[in-house]
Length: 257
Image (cartoon, rainbow, N blue to C red; front, side, top):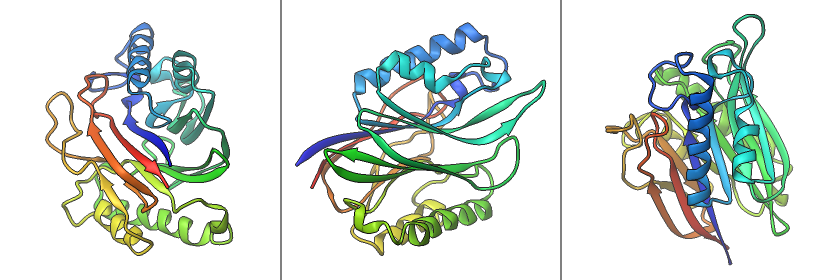
């Protein structure tokens, strides 16, 4: 069995604990991203799922944050999922992304709606782990509307159920799902609904079991999660104490059967 570590982290456009993006100087953004890169290297995950990461946005320094992180972490493989695209004077391009030590052999980005600011979505990848296809979903749900979140997780469930129905035989196991779900697991909301759905496909577990992730530095809610399928065993998880974003990162370790 192979031991793997997955990290999920909403990096808040690289702004750190500044409450509004656009008020952080470019050099401060780069310094904070380098600190995020050092934290990633210290935690040493095999796969990193990032939310609120910018490709080219005026409010976030007009540079590619994924490329910058990749250069400062040494990960060989990366893919962007842009959920917001706007050109012009206030150009904005941002969404979700993956960094991986293992080859990303397939990817597809799904945008939930059509807004040019504040839109959410999910990034699907298949990662080659020693010849086995590991499907993963990195998602970011609506921060305010429970109704929107339910509609969004329905899109995720439909995608997994129908879009890849003819490809499941190629999967080593059902998908790992992670990201910023913007609701707490103990509430009757999207996280609980998504777990209910995945439990129909096996003995999924939700991580972290405890611990709060938002808002840093004194978090009061758990919003960031990783859903693991039954093939992931001997699981350990942790919420990482960090002041590099308004969210705290979460990692899981597991053996892949």
